[in-house]
Length: 170
Image 1: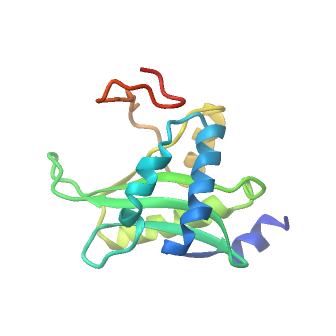
Image 2: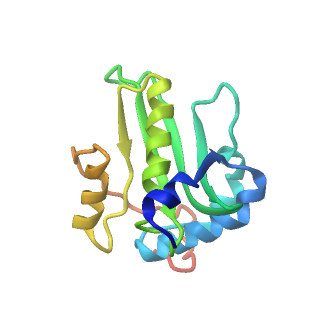
Image 3: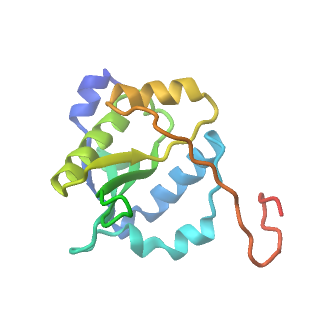
C-alpha cells in the first residue's frame, strides 16, 4: 500500500452496481466479524435492490474503488419529515477492506457521503458505528471528520420464528 494521500487521490467513489454484490458481501462478512456486529447474509441478499441508486429515492450505497477493486463501501440515506421536523442523513454499513484500513479510503467515502447529504439538504448527519473492538479508536476516527457523540443506540436481535439461526442466540 502506498502513502495515504497518494492512495486517497486514486480512489473512485461511485454508486453500487449489481456486479459489486460478491465484493460487498465479502466485505460485510469481514467487517461484521472484525467489529462484532450481527450480519445476516440471507437478508443482505434479499435486500440487494435497495443498494442500487434509484432516481427519486433518498438512499444509495457508495462504493470505493481502486484499480477496479472494491476496497470500501457505505450506505447513505436521507430521512425527511422526522417528528422533530429535521431532515436527517444517515451513514450505515460502512467498511473498508483489510489492507486498506487506515489508508484514507474511509475518509474519502465519508467526505463524498457528507457532500451528497449536504446537497440533499440534510440538517444533520448521524453515523451508525460499531464500537468493538476499540471504542476509543472508533470515536477518534469519526471525530476526525467532524462528528461528535450525541447519544447511544442499543439493539436487540429479534428472531420472530423462534428458530435459532447459525451464530444467533435465541
